Every structure is written in structure tokens, then in C-alpha cells.
Length: 219
Image (cartoon, rainbow, N blue to C red):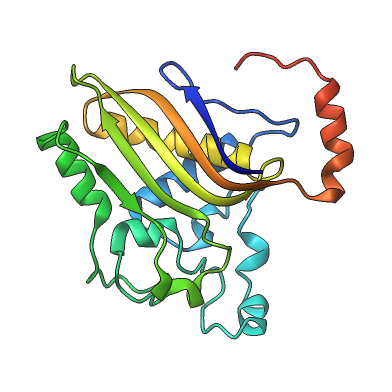
């Protein structure tokens, strides 16, 4: 399908919907990486579940023709938020000559919360050659309510596997939303995901049929 959206109330919790065990520790750690600009998968080495491991080995980088070290996640949301507009130079390079979108976002939310729009862009055509996983997380926008107490979040995703990847990203971005709200002294209210292309892979059809028959539990 194309052009779908879903909204979650995150005032008191973080939504997870999955038939699998949710790696909450890994999600929190990756959310922190989003907010610090780190792109070294070894930051997540202590967590068993990792969506990056298979794509960050030295052998994989070599087969893709990329000059990246073992564990380098390449250009990601983290690097784009922290250093947008600069060519990706690897996880071991600390040069920050690009735009620090996160720092500007936090400053604007604190100083001019109602001015908006408060946006961070994660897609940069100049860094696509250094993108390990397809960069489908395009942008995130925040909105502060008129009472200056609540903050809402909206995420735009260009393409996603609705069964395999969407539950993880809902938890990940909801965690990011909570952290940013805390950093600027506001309370998270809702998070909306606007999805360009949502699909389900054929090999997962059996698991999907099982899910349909189950009675959902509240989160």
C-alpha cells in the first residue's frame, strides 16, 4: 500500500506491537546513538539482537566496494542528524563540519517552541554511496502545543516492511521522542508515522496469518 499513517499515544508509555521478543535494551541504546551521531556498531556489541551486524562486517564492506572499517554502519540517521551536508568519512572520524541538526532543534524547541517547523532531515543524496541499509527514514518533525507543555512527533518513512521492521522503528522513534521531550522540558503526547510505501514479504505470510488470529493485548 502507499500513503498510510498511524498515530500512537505516548503520554505514559512506549508502544510495542510484535509477536517476537522486543529488544528494549537495544532500542534504547540505538536511540541514544541517533542522538549522539555515533555510527559504530560496536556500541551495540553487548546486545544480542542487532539489525546492523550482518551488514557491517569487513567482508560485506569489501563486497560492496566500500572503504569502511569493521563495524562501520555507514551514513545513517545518526550521522545525518549530527553532521548533515558533510561527506561521510567513517565511524572513526570525529570531524563535524556539517550542520548539527539536533543541536539546532533542541535550541529552537527551548527558545522558540511555537515558532516551528521543528524538523530534522535524515536523507542526503550526497551520502547514499555510504549508506549500508536503505535510507528510508526521511525526516522527523516536532510540534509544541499552545500551552507549551506537550510535544508531538511526526516521522516520515519512504518505504518499510510493515511486519518485520515497522514495530522496531515505532519503538525506536517513540524512545527518541521521549528523550527529546525530556531534554527540552516538555511532555511527549503523540507520535505519528507517515509511510510512503508499506509492504510485506511473501516468506512472512505464515507468521502474519498467526498474528491475525491472536487477540491483541494493550500496551
